[in-house]
Length: 411
Image (cartoon, rainbow, N blue to C red; front, side, top):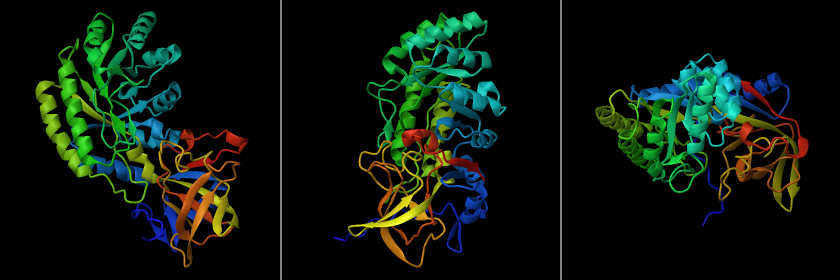
């Protein structure tokens, strides 16, 4: 059996010229000079535009494409994406403010998540943002706040389905969950909703995330549409919107391959026909975050020291898990696996070796790459973590050990 670490799948989203990664139309070395310091995140606007265009090509034209801001809420990124999609989905009042600043009509913005506080509900109602109702208590609170404000809130019921998205990285539905209202209780909730002064728009049914299995997504979409048709029989008004969530994954680890988007689109086309027959006038929305931005972003840190300990080579950098928790393996991974990591100014390199990349934190968890083959690096070289456009900085413990925050740039 070979002891050679497994290679990642070919990653072709960024060009390489003179062995230097290119992003945003410039060499990484030049971008680092422009930013002025490391570490930093960089997001490529052209790559985001290309990904959305890819979705438009493969998905039915009737599908509404929404961006889930939690994946990357950087205002410049959101502003750019807002001009290319049909709606924004937020999960906090902070994200809602960024969404409203884009100029997108408030009725194209939806607010999901458990535990919304009264001031968040009040702000959303006043703004005209649609609220995805997560509980009976929230339903009653929204109705009362609407009366006090003299505004009829626009709502959708978030349903916790009795099925899950198979092969997904995180299970968001099926079984006991803090998200949404259990499907078996939704008919009674809809009956109560009919007695309240609320504008019912439809359902939000999200069953899982980070899925590369097209067949699993097709099955979940089929079950989601069937569940929505069943629940619509109890609704106080026609279902205008069915948000079937997202869950489209991107490849991070060795052996993973890109999602078969064409197969997803073909299945959705069939489901649209069925949905429109039984729910006249309904629009189906896909809520995607990671799939839109993940591969368009990189995290860059600089090698401070090259250290050898008992025969193992360590590259000690000025970055780490406090900036990129996911790449350290501490954000949802059961068994730690390496993100794709390269030496950005020596992508291929004339000399190569197996090294571990670590940060400056006083914890053995601060690992960005463990025993990964890459170009031989020295102090001053730039380490790049690819697939870093989603769940990077804002999903990381930036206050840990009080190191400075990295810069974010949109190029």
